[in-house]
Image (cartoon, rainbow, N blue to C red; front, top):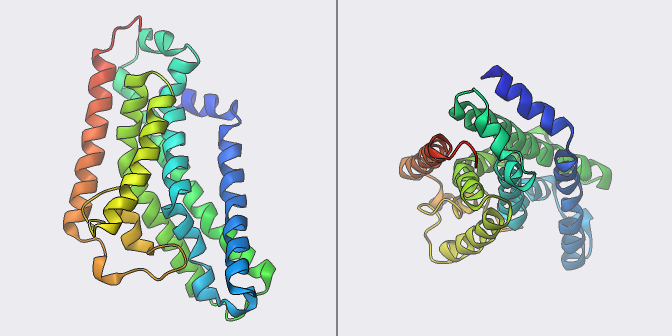
Amino acid sequence: MLRALAAELAKLRRSRVPLWTVIVVALWPISSIASLAATTGSLRDIGWEQFVRIGPQTMTSWYGVVLSGYVASFMFGREYSEGTARNMLALPVRREYFVISKLIVLIVWVFALGTLSAVVNTAYGAILGLDGFAWRYALTSLRESLLVATILVATLPLVGWIAVVGRGYLAPMLFSGVAFMSGVLMLQAGWERWYPWAMPYAVTGLLWLPGDTSSSLGASSWAILAALFVAGVAALVAHIDLADSLE
């Protein structure tokens, strides 16, 4: 198990994909800041309490869903796109170890991006010299970012399974795009507490608007997310265990 995890980390160190995801998270708030400046006329009128929501709210938007979907696609689809799946599955190692090691790296990666999003957004606020700073606002941004990351992580084993079945990046990326659009539709229908890809909106609200505490996630929402995560992991393990060793 530890060797499988070490192998995943070694492959990650040789890739530029982690760097590109960091760049996206670090620079994406600039577009939202520019949009906010254009609509309000002056960022000085925006307080810290409102500004720090940019981190979790942009994660809730398509960038968070599609970016995390791309990370999952990369972790599970790269073996097929790079032609290494045949060698990996032929190794004398329990195949579920490959799934578990990839999931560990995937979860740490997504949570690291969520943390980075909150830190970067706080840094932008400091650079802009906004008034009314308090650490509780930065901590709220971090808490909501990690909560959104948790919801996203619950959906990613399914994306990984689609990457394995589709043997590459295309199918899971298409799925991630459709998942985001369907999440918006479910939000408009008032089903954000029941549909995993709309659940982040119950945490953050729509971009630049306050969250709706009346639609906060309850026990049933977390049960749905847990069931989705378990089902996705089970599907991944079953597919890898039953795959032809010469695939």
